[in-house]
Image (tube, rainbow, N blue to C red):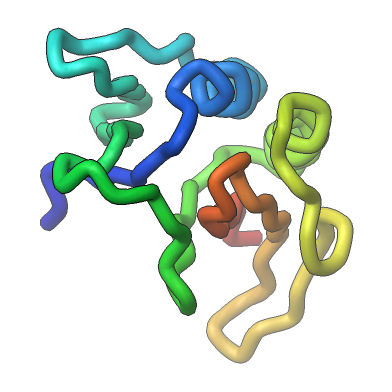
Length: 125
């Protein structure tokens, strides 16, 4: 359904450090800088783009917005969460673990990127 997700950043190099770390922790590759100065991450056919807002105003995190990443194993989620916390992100909510859900148990972890965007790593059990 989606072609890509784009998040704003106020510091592309700071974002590169964070996103390169979380993507390589789950088996992805570092981002590439496109001609417009945006970071592009492609993993398993999905695309995440990080860039400065085109209107020239500061990037801000969306209130209520969460970007969810489908991750293959709980171990990769643990690595993602650790890498994010060590590279400018903020580990939020509970540590990685199983959350009971009527639709089925999930292994989850949450981070905020350096610009405050909320990210979730999810593995359906």
